[in-house]
Structure formats: structure tokens, C-alpha cells
Picture 1 (cartoon, one colour):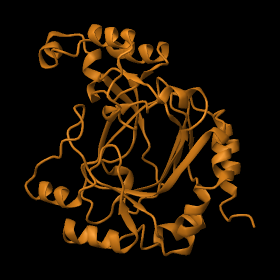
Picture 2 (cartoon, rainbow, N blue to C red):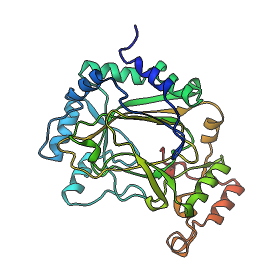
Picture 3 (spheres, rainbow, N blue to C red):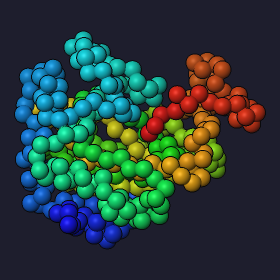
Picture 4 (cartoon, helix red, strand yellow):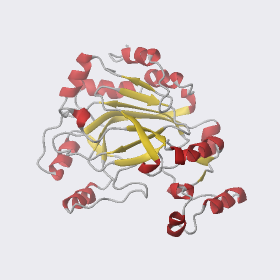
Length: 318
């Protein structure tokens, strides 16, 4: 039996590619109005206003959300609450200022959300996305869900790691005038003085990519429109980032979110023994050398050439 959301496949098939700031598709009014309005009315999406962070987490957990390990986020909500009570930021990455929380709706009660969750994880939906970007679905594993991102969530500009084959995001925000909130995804380019970084990634396919500081890039656009969908296949230039700074007690940044991950083929073989340069190793100035005296670019090159392996635990998944 065909899903009520099958029409989304046709929208993906008909979408035109957008070249700037990198090759992607963007579809406004992705979900039909009736479906979108019904989704917006679901209690799991339109959560009730809460008086405190503790009440918010109790509410989210009762609705079927669970903490998920995610770049830019902590999985310790107790620590997160304590840090917010003292106006402190949770350290996550040297190129960011903070970390937030990401929760995924694993057990929706609303029928339409159950159907939607099943559809975005289906072969038919993911096959349409994969074919759009010349990705072989049979060589990938799927990962998709309905997620909320709380205040402080931050991922600095990055193109995604090489094992990610495709990513998509659909805004389903219930806050009034949600497009005005400071939590939307940025799509960026390197500034002229830092374009050598992406050229290095382009010319060195056996080196992993990394996060970089915000000031190394400029934002070309943000995905602010509600019910908009963006999808792309990560490459050397697919720079994107988020820094969420908003009050999440009245409502939360919410998305349909998914990825395809390589599990077969050259990309998967590369994953078994990656090399990597961190952002400061691309920073050719005396300050960086003083702060990271043992991490110069030439030292890293020597390690790569000599066959030394980089600690995989330091490689960000995104």
C-alpha cells in the first residue's frame, strides 16, 4: 500500500539543483498544506510551554523523545541543566562556543508522525534522494528521524565527514515567526583567505575533513522557511553550520532529519584508516603555532607520509 507521503518523491525528482554556495536542492512547501498543518498540531511537535528546563525534559521524555549522541550536543541533560542555571557553556569543540542537546522522537503516538517516521526511513524515499545525487543506496545505511535541538546547540562550519553520502533537513517549527529565531542552518563559503582549506580537501581524498572557526567562512544563506527541505551530498565545499541561541521553553527547533552513510565502496574502505588535519593546523600564523606547538601542518604531513594513524576517537562524525 502506497504511503500518503509518496508525493514527496515526485517533488524530489522534479527539484532543480542550486549551485550556490554548493550543489544542493531546496524545496519550499515540501509537505502539502493539509499534512503540514496536521503535523504542526501533533503534541510531539507542538509541545506545551514549560516553566523550566527540568519540566521541558520531563515533557519531551514523556512524549517519546530520547537523548541522542549528536555533534554539537551533550547527552547529559542533568549537566546541561546545571550549566544553564549558572550561565555557563558546555565545552564541545575547539571551533565552537557551546553545546546543546538533541533529542529524537523514537516512539511517536500521533498516527501521522508514525507514518512520516516510517516513510523518511523507507527505501523508496531514500532511493529518490540517492538517485538525485548519484549515490548508490545499496552501498549505504539509512538514518532518519524527527529531532529537536535545544538552546546552545552549535556546529561550526564544516562539510561533513567522507563516510556521509547524503543528508537532508526539513523545518517543522511551531514557534510563531519561527523564521526570525536564531537557530537556522547556515550554508556557507570559505572567505578568500581560507579557500585553500577546501582546495586541500578536494585534492587529498584520503584525508578526513574537519570543523573550522566561524570567521573562516561567510554565510551565503540560511534555511529559515518553515516546511522547507534542503538536501545535498557532502563534498569538499558543502560548508554548513548552526548556532542555536533562543528560548526553548515555548517551543523548540524541530526538523525531519536524515543521512545516508557509506558502508561499501571506496568511501567505506577509506574510513578504516583515515588521516586528518584539525582546523588549527590549517592556520598559518604564529598564534596558532604557540597554542598548538606540536600540531604544525608540516608535522602532520610527515605523520601522514610515514603511515602513522590518527586517533579515530578524535574524528567528528559530522
